[in-house]
Amino acid sequence: MAPVETFRFPHRGDAIRCRIQRGKRSKTMALRVSTEGLVTVLVPADLADSKARQFAKSRAEWISSQRRYFATLARAFPRKEFVSGESLKVNGKPYRLKFIPSTKTIPFCRLRGRRLVVSAPGPHRARETIINFFFDQTLSKVQPILKRLGPSLGFPTPKIKIVDQENRWASCSKNKILRFNWKLGMVPPFVLNYVVAHEVCHLKHPNHSIGFWRTLRALNPRAEVARQWLRQNSGLLRII
Ligand SMILES: [Zn+2]
Image (tube, rainbow, N blue to C red; front, side, top):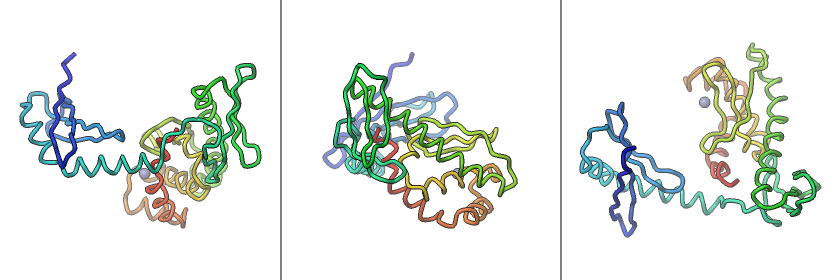
C-alpha cells in the first residue's frame, strides 16, 4: 500500500492538515473537506507533491470557510451521549431521553408521554436500540406516504430500503429502489412528505431538470420550505 502523504500549512492562525490521495483515473485535482474538518487533496497518480501543496494553499480560504461551517454545525448539533435528560426529536417533536441501564431485560426503546425511554446495558447498546427504533419509525411513516404518492404519478408502490447514511437523506437508484435514511424519523411530517415526494419524482425524472421540479412542486406545494428546513438542519445527520 502506498504511504499516506500528509502535509500542513498555516492559514490565519490555523494549521491546516491535508492528506494527498492519488487516483489512477483522476486527471484533475480536487479538494474534499470532511465534516470533522479533515482535508483530502485528490490528485492524478503521477502529480508532484509540490503541485498538490500549491493547489491546496491556493484554496486555503475556501478550506477555512468549509472547516468553520462544519465546526459551527457541530456546535449547533452536538453528538448525543445517550444519557437521561438529552433531547431527541421524533417526527419533529422533542422528547426527553430517559435511559434505564439494565442487563436483565432485552433492550428496548419506546415513546412514553413526552419521553423516549431506552433500556439497555450501556450507552453503546442504547445508541443501537435508538437507531433500531428510528429504522422502524421511518419505515412506518414512509410507507403510507409512498402508497399515496406512487399511484398519482402512475407508478406502482416502489421498492424501498431504510439505510444508514452520513451525508444524504434519501436517494433513488438506477434500478428504481428508493433509499431513505433512518434519521428521517427525526424530521417533521411536512419535511418527510417532501423527501418522499422528491424521490418518487426521481422515478419519472432521474435528474434535477426543470421537469423534475415542476412535477415535484405540483405534488408537494411546500417543497421550498421543506428544502430550506433540510439545509438548516443538515446537522441532524450526524448527532447519533
Ligand atoms: Zn434529487
